[in-house]
Amino acid sequence: MANHEATKKKIVDGLFELLKDNELASISVSNICQTASVSRMSYYRSFKSKDQIIDYKIDQIFTEFFNYLMTRPNHDISAFLEAYFAVCRKNAYYIGILIDADLNDRLYNKLHFYLTDLIEKGIFKLRTDIPVMWVNFAAGGLSQMVVQWVKDGLVQTNQEMVMVAHRFLR
Image (tube, rainbow, N blue to C red; front, side):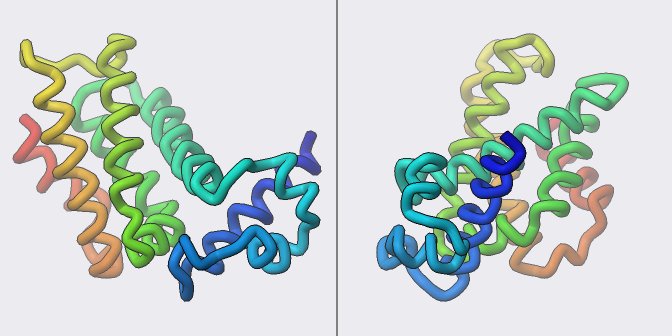
C-alpha cells in the first residue's frame, strides 16, 4: 500500500512539474509517466485522468485543512481561518502552480465543497439563515485572497491574513 501511495505522489509531482511550463491540455500521459519515472500501467492503476490527479492533490490539501481544523479547541471563524491559511502556506508550491496554470477555479470549487460539508455536519456553525450565500461569498473571497497572497510571495503572516479575512467574514 505504501508503494502505491509513493507511486501516486510521483505522478502528482510529475504532473505539477510539467504544469510549470505547459498547459494542462498539452501534457500527455506519456509526459507524466516519463517525468514521474513510472509506467503507464502504474499511472492507470492510480489515476484515470489528469483532472483526477489535480483533484486528488487538492483533496489532499483540503483533507489536511480539515484535519488541522479538527485539532483546534473550537470551530469558530478564527479557528477556520487559522487552519485555512496555515495549510495554504504549507501547500503554496502546489497552489502557485495551479494559479499559474489558470486552474485556481479548482481551489474555489473544493473550498466551496468543504465549507458546505463543514456546515452540513454541524462542525462549523453560522449565524445566518442563508448559508449558501455565505458559502459562496466566503469561498470566492478566500480563494481569491490566497491567489493574491501566493502571487505576492506569501509576504503577510498567516495571522495577518486571518485578521484581514476575519473583518469580512464576521
